[in-house]
Image 1: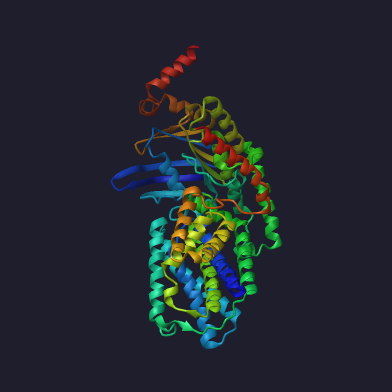
Image 2: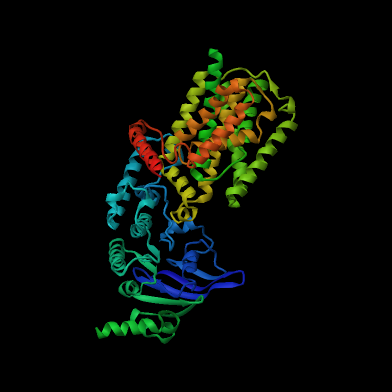
Length: 264
Length: 297
């Protein structure tokens, strides 16, 4: 079964076509990569899937159902969660509260009950905090729960964003450059974390990433975008040897660097 | 003299009720309003008219005033918030709304136009005002400490990320607007039954600005901050009455000073609690240290 299927997806901003006629399918339970140079339309595709933008043309199927015309919060309710390229945490809140806002979806109680703080509301609040602490433990931030989110170092902020997205209990997780700004060591550690949560929560993951080592390590299949159109798709090995891709994205330099490594 | 002091306390409590309501809207959802005097006026007139013309029970009238304000809040909130008006655009929309309500009050028969309603029964006593204020603060605190309060804060902090947390922006903004409208309406009802005379000229943009200033000066994202600010804003002009016309200058100066030295408001995102007082020695130490540093420079 396909978790996500895009057919002929197109988005225009005035005269500019951010992506044109994109079709791709993501089977349930897989990790897929989405790569391409800056401005290729990768984040636009995330924004289309999550309902931030409405597509100009084409369809988005999630679990076999059309997603278009739904509000972002309704799409989240269907089981889609995402992280952002430029980290978007609730900066003035504590690390714990950030994750609690995600966990709130699954320990729901009414506004009226909240206003008079019925005893069951207090119980639910305890459950929310417990749940949030679990997700913080998964990414290794449980000892930093009380710190303000913007006081965390950059790499940990990315992990917090991941924990916050996991707290929504998604089926499909969209990660927008999770390893941006990390050194090779940190990004490989993050790749390990992504692989772990993928197995632990039975997720389907679509990953935008510029760190090729992370993409090659994680993704069963990679889609390559360039100037808003799909250039190629295939396994990591196929992509690495595709001449179009090498020209457009990896560049001659990547091969040379790869060769050098082989010689060592 | 005792009556004078009681009067100031009651006015403070009324300001606290309205400001806490607005704090839930402006401080937690992050939308600025320059028209909340209209909700205050609607509450005052609804409650006033009910007791004045129809001899309705005071508490019932107070309740009806809050309800009416909430209903009008819904009426103004749906189109503006559905259109996703934000920041200055929303503020201007509320400014227009506030003036429109005032003009309406000046021209309706039931409100007796600019003559106002003289001789409303005096029913707002200190215990009543105190009880209502305590109730409103308690409810506001419960809201802030619930998932619904967190959702509102998330919307203020980053509405794109909030949407991606499955939060319905429209529902959160609308419900907090209605809550603030109800609080202002109840405060208006209390006001009408304390001063016993209301006229449209009492509910101008000046009152709206004062309410919003109370929230900003008290601290966006705090309940206790706006409570303290509301009390200060009522008490300080009274205490400065000896200074005659200069008191308004001093009042303005106070606002400027708060914004210069505490741009995050008196309390920032924090709440005042008994625990806060334990930190005072630390603050003093930090303050002295920074003083030393300045001296060295």
